[in-house]
Amino acid sequence: MPLLVCDLDDTLVDRVRVFAAWAGELARRHQLGAETHEWLVMIDERGSAPREEFWSAVRERFNLPAEVGDLVAEWIASFPDRYPREPPVLEELISLRDEGWTLAIVTNGGADVQARKLAASGLDQIAHVVCISGVIGLRKPDRAIFDLAAQRAHQPLLGGWMIGDNPREDIEGGHDAGLKTIWLQRERAWPLDSVTPDLTVDDILQALRHVRTSG
Image (cartoon, rainbow, N blue to C red):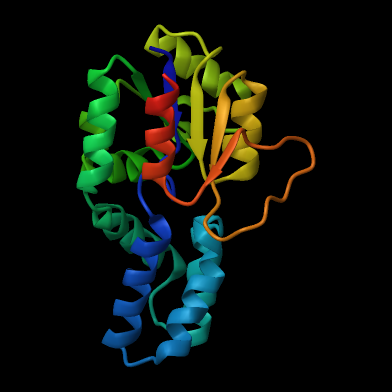
């Protein structure tokens, strides 16, 4: 069977949901109101906002006494461990693996943070190959990170699939590497003119089941 490459955040695990739960708990704990929850979700930018900028804005809005560096460190020490195990996703991945697919997770992010997310979610026990940008010094959409994943998996990129939520990093990057691509839309319009995904779906189970039937 060919290679299956998956993104982590907002692909194999719904980071938006994990962050929204964290933001809601923070707002309730400090009695900050529903508008604070919405504001936190907005400035998080689906995880793309640098943590220093995110916590600087939070510190200023709520006049927090802690330094930004300390707030970032506390976040790094706690948030990744909130990533849940998703039994239906894990079961579908195990079925794909049992049918002969080679599974690779390719994710941008810090080495320790992403590794702990993978451990908390149980995905580190299922994937054959994991490529974390903070470990290897390469980032999606650079083709080199996809080449490395294929090399470690002992599989060609041609004929494989890439599943992800980020149009440029996952879909454009995967396409340029020679992979067929599935985009997790998550209520967004496709933003790129350079390339379009081979398939657009609403959730990861749809994507994984399509890969199974395509095999």
